[in-house]
Length: 154
Image 1 (cartoon, rainbow, N blue to C red):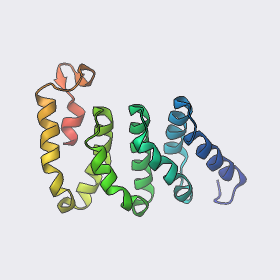
Image 2: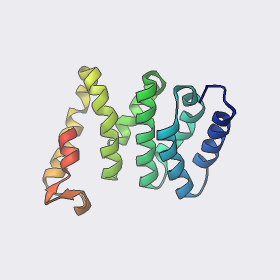
Image 3: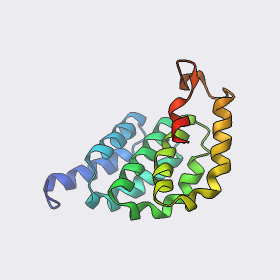
Image 4: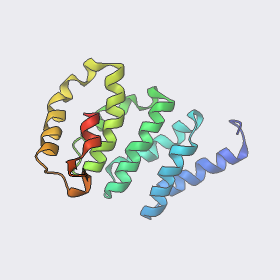
């Protein structure tokens, strides 16, 4: 679609409404759709709504919001520069799925500038220690290996 196509405006408006909804299913679906349909031109209109969802009470919504911001970062890295401290806090989320999702962006940032991630080494070590000591839920085990995908990212 062209940047000025009428459908694009309707899509942004509907996504904004769904992201602000009280219904968790609508919010989750909007976050999934956003990851697939967003373009660089839509980022300024949708980023504030997604940013608010990083503190949502439901962990599934927080995880999808983290992944949506990662997608936004892939499209426009400069758009999420102000959220780097927020991502560092999300790394310490009480839900391991949210923490694991935040590793995608932090891994990308470490690839680009390893020195910027130096202060997170102790957090990464702590997370790895929790995984190795089987302190995560059994849901994260794969063939009796604790959270292998998170271990790989760390």
